[in-house]
Image (cartoon, rainbow, N blue to C red; front, side, top):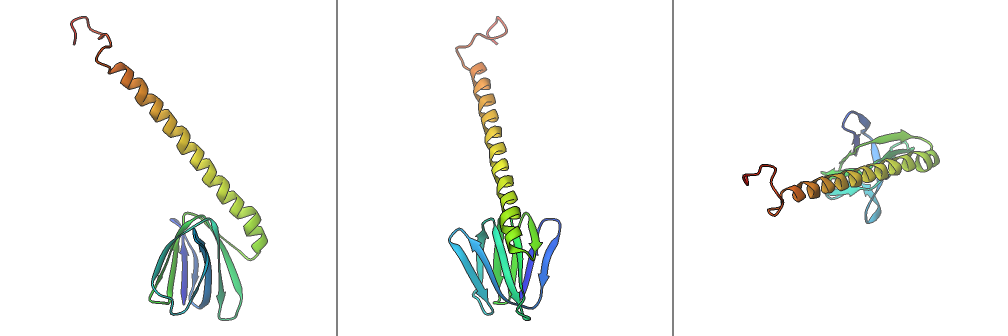
Length: 140
């Protein structure tokens, strides 16, 4: 099988001799072997792991993403951010934590932005009320 993991700016993994892949979506962890049915899923912040023909296990932390399997042999992961590593503990403890902090910070920023937009719209609506006295004395 072939495994390809990409971000918007780089090809992080391009492995042609993959025997198995493990990944995680909202339903939990799953595995892919040669001949797997075509498949598409949204990944959570997690570790994608795989074994090569030499039985060496490799790891890549992904910040969410989309995983697709086509033809039972091509596995593609498109993600916003990915970090390769040989030390699984480091990836789990440091990288995944950083990914989660970034997602939490983005969520907080979106929430603050939404609050600001809502407040601005309410303020504008106050000035558009029909019973509000107009700036010009002639009713315009």
